[in-house]
Length: 514
Ligand SMILES: Cc1cc2nc3c(=O)[nH]c(=O)nc-3n(C[C@H](O)[C@H](O)[C@H](O)COP(=O)(O)OP(=O)(O)OC[C@H]3O[C@@H](n4cnc5c(N)ncnc54)[C@H](O)[C@@H]3O)c2cc1C
Image 1 (cartoon, rainbow, N blue to C red):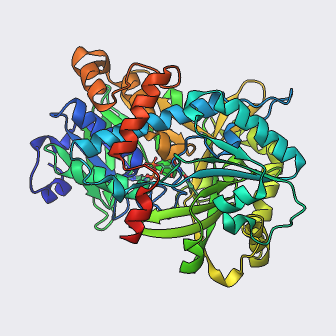
Image 2: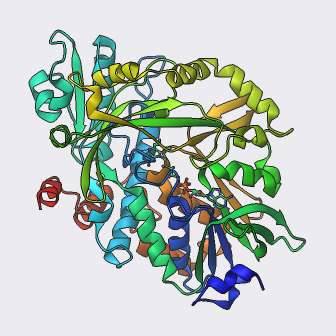
Image 3: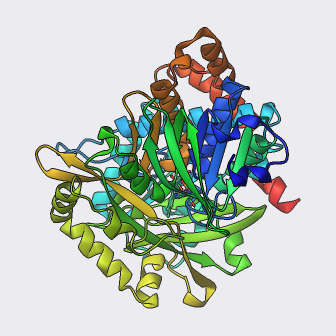
């Protein structure tokens, strides 16, 4: 037997060959683990996390922006087309996906997996704010296009400065009065502490028979055995002792660490992928009086040449019961794939099978590279100037600079261009369904539930069985139907999740003043 299994006091004897291995203890593994355990209570699962706590990388609340991405305020989800119209397809998909996430979380609350929704989700209005004639015109068109769909009903639009002032005084005070501005506001927006949610899911998983969580254990290698199961090589980071286990299914949910592990798996479906790391920083407000004066997530337009995920936003956050105010992220470049990673991550990920797509993506994205270099070279004064676009009266001494999580954008083979840089999430699965890996970072944690449901359908034959289908419907009441196509169902579902997750507008006031 393997030495590290001695540390298990309870639990199953099947830990040397669990049914499932989850690599990484972030929100993706947590979501998949809980779903699988609910679908099949006798399943055995081992989770390996290289750090000494769960949710220490991207899923940590200070490493991500905590926006429940519903496409209410994120302008990069609604591009303007060549004919001037605004494309809403992606926005509708993301909005629907977030509703599915809320259904799952409401189910977790109703079934006692999570004690209270106040631990991880809060109602914070989502606003888009723009200035300048062209941007105002775009926002007006976007509002019209989106509100024709029921998932965006309730969105408000205005060019009236007094109204915007009442919504977001920090953004309007001290602003040039002659400037043309516009804003949309969606009351139903959310701030999500994905770290607290992940922790709650792991707390639940740890109490289940047959589930083992190993902290400080790094997966070094994985290879396919003759019988198509997987041999996983794990190192105890404290003692440096190596162990091997076998499993029928492995999920590489290692965030930025997923690409190197996918490469090691050697599956043909994983060939040709590369990664482009983008680091980030926030300004975190240190003045309670200022934090109190803002109650919104305000997203603007990305500047020309910048990557979509670096759209600046001024965000109210609720982290561990305390209100906070963050601005950013300021993007940057580092060759690390994880915040706690190594500078060798990027060079070591370059292989014969991905060098061509990586070079091609590099050549096609020179403005991005230039943008990132400029961002890295920003002085504190430059950062203040960017903040002043959203908070004209900002003073540098009221803000501290903090490092955000690391994102690894996906580089993919492309027939025409040789290689393309993608800003979304990419799920790679082995043809026989015995391995799945998640690459990329956006829209990320908000859509974890839909992504994991898709993964289960791709990799587990039981997903089609009447038993699992019945369970899916219990866990996600709208399962098998479309919230983007069925207006009444969407309204009913939203009413239920709003109630269970305490997302009605007045709730936060009560909580924060309590
Ligand atoms: C700056 C920033 C802002 C973001 N904002 C938002 C937002 O507003 N809304 C939103 O929905 N999403 C947002 N995201 C995306 C979101 O944070 C991620 O999509 C999500 O947290 C990814 O979860 P994960 O479980 O895949 O990865 P992670 O949370 O990173 O977890 C992966 C884990 O794997 C571990 N690991 C790595 N390699 C190994 C190994 N070899 N062996 C064992 N363990 C390993 C790591 O230590 C880590 O704990 C943001 C991300 C960033 C960086």
